[in-house]
Amino acid sequence: MRHRITSSGRRCLALAAVTAGCTIGAAHADERQTDSDWKFSVGPGMYVFPKFPGSSQLQVLPFPVQDISWKDRFFSQGPDVLGVNVLHGENYHLGMSVSFDFQSRSSSDDARLKGLPDVHYGPKLRLFGDYTWWAFTGATAVYQDIAGTGQGLTATADLFVSAPIGNWLISMGPGLTWANATYTQTLFGVTPRESAASGLPHYDTGSGLRDIHFNVNATYKISPHWSANVAAVVGRLERYAAGSPITERRLDLNGMASVLYRF
Image (cartoon, rainbow, N blue to C red):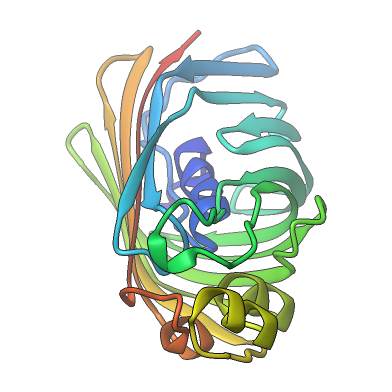
């Protein structure tokens, strides 16, 4: 049985904007069909992610979740403010979106960060592609900073298996995130000047593997109009991210929960 990719998975992919990597989901086989070209769902959501990349502390961000699409061509879903499927079919999508990234860092987040420059969050251009065969989905995405935050470029690759269990749809699978030198230097590097100001050792970075992660996404169909979704990404920082003196722990936990009403 083939499970078509839908918004719950793309909202989890939008969690990639928070984590630099995530999952993709799939629809219930009996998903309600409508004659309208428009699909419109809204509801409350909550994101959980590290206070800053490499932090041992988590923060919670309430955030409204929207799922708006027209003919499976244009969409607005979660942190993906506006996107377009340039090419799409029953089992694949190729497109782009403007996605907000909540990764940031402030010197006030931790006493160890005093003397380091703040890193602000901002929008990123996301280029993505996914392909589904039977219960398996492969997905890739590239994120480019377009706000001048210094967060450079990251790329993700994920593989998922999805299965319906009653009113539940469960998707899970492994993935990895690659980051360029601009990204790793901004978020994990320490220049000689920053070392003198903060007391942290000088640390140069380069491009390479940022993390290896495992994704879990569960969607529950409450009624034809209501659904609930929980997603989690459990990762382990690698290479420059793992060895940075800024990093407090390699375990990288990110999550999202939402309830949606479909009109």
